[in-house]
Image 1: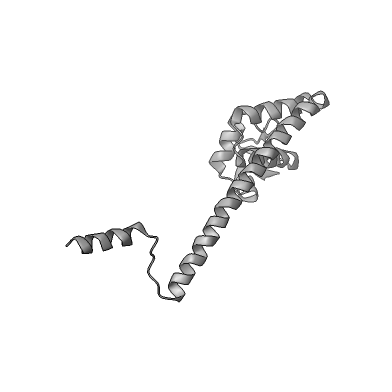
Image 2: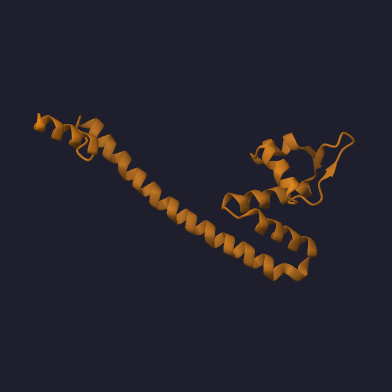
Length: 139
């Protein structure tokens, strides 16, 4: 059994977020102890994992709730759940491709700056340097 604090640490999610998700109906079987604190089981951790995964790629709460509700209904919803997961995976792959492009640009800029530092060069691509040169020429 895990407290909300335990789950937050295990899953690297804030307690506030877990409470919000619980209130949104994402953890349908979480019980409460005598002090009314949520107590998570290993099965509940599986729900937290999928919710965290879906949220991390930007799935909206309404869609997550639909997925969870379909899980509760059972095997008759396998096709619908498959489509949700498949579409989410495609979205994640697109996000990864976009991040790869951004990483490529950052790697290019990193090498550019390393070269400037190594060779004690001026950054001729910095518009501020060009502005200063224009100001000096106009004086």
